[in-house]
Length: 242
Image (tube, rainbow, N blue to C red):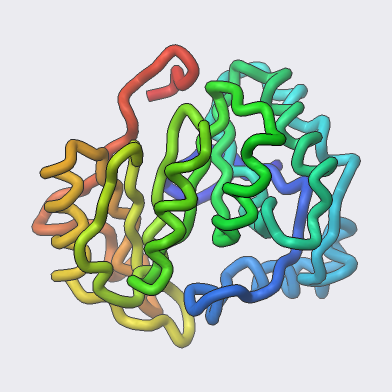
């Protein structure tokens, strides 16, 4: 567990680390760079670098946190990676079940596997699930997501590297948008962001703009038309921090 600078969550929890690239959004993966840096520093959980690794000893960590918080699950991996056994995914979901004070945010690019395994998982109301949609060729992930019986479904359009065009946001409760950051960051166009914002308005979906990104993301900031757009889903009985 660690505090995080990711604006749409509060805490990261990584019972799984490491991944493999699956789509164009993975090109400049921040998690890979961080994992290799932690490996070089001698961090025990990153002895395998960015190779997929399960950490059974990390599963119990949320039990230690009594204050309700938003928890981003596996910020350094993808829970629905094809090499992660179903039983391990079920263990992660069981931890969420036994910690109803927290809200667990699960984000994946493996939307087909998510939809396939969804009937074999316990979808408690404190589990939110999202898919990454960084370019229009991945919009089918939204259709896969709609099949999942989660209490809240969200999109992460980050890094946004192309115009997504028309979006069907039926049964989608939240949209996050952000530009790529760091060395080699691909540009984001303001019109792409505005298009998503306006579609969220029309379809009554909360819109969260995280950052413009670039080589110096602090300099480019996160204002859109002079305003910070940090909308979260409506407060509910299972999400009590907003």
